[in-house]
Length: 307
Image (cartoon, rainbow, N blue to C red; front, side, top):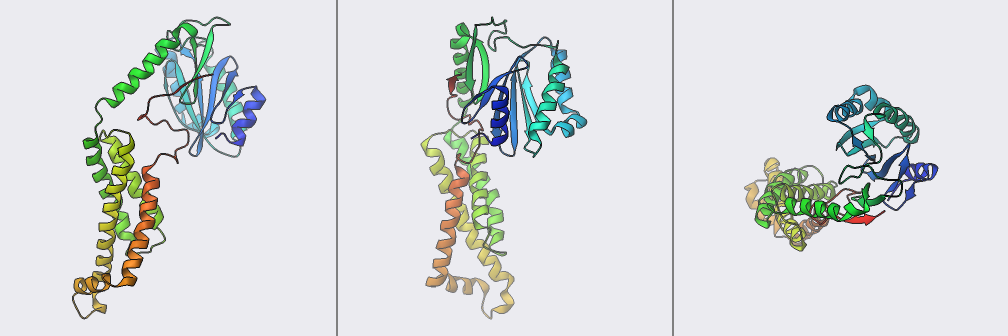
């Protein structure tokens, strides 16, 4: 969902405004804006004439002075696309107005404004076909649309070919084990962080699953939830056992024996199950993707929309 600042600029510049992207011509360039976590993202479709011009543009965007002056968080891209992330500050609209004037003037003469993203040939006045891919606008010849779709399909296929459930399970176990450490320690400290740490466990397991080559699909969330919940259940008990051991001077009997006796009481079991259920709920949030904002998931086929 686009925020007020981008929506305001989009209307001011005459951009096409959708729920998750604003795009249009700005000083002759095809520019897209979208929201990201804590920042605004600007994508510029262009074509650098040579590698030297591209490197000079990257240098301009990465200088400490320009990053501080215009609130640039980071920049990336290649010769036919630049993506620039800006801090979501109160004066974002003023910064972006100053930035686009200075930056576009800087790259003038180094780029072609109206070249096809696929074939890198010049587009005629009525030849540009705008396509939206991952909420970024690209300009292509109508005759190049099929080739663009083939490029995207090949990219997705190449990304997924070495990914398996077994690889993902190994990564999920490692991630959940790492994420469970704060959960265990929280039992010694306080319980108000249960939800957050449960989220950490699920998120760590999800990242471990993805980084080690786990496949996507319906099995993924179930696998992550089961692995993460298992680690949460075990480490919660370990945390309480450590707490008993730390306070062993308060018991006359062996701390482990006292722990077993206490654990079998209804009140203790009720607290254990209730806390674990809260953790599991947070784990599911950590395992899921819904909280990402306009961030591409490489696990699904890329969507191409007509602009």
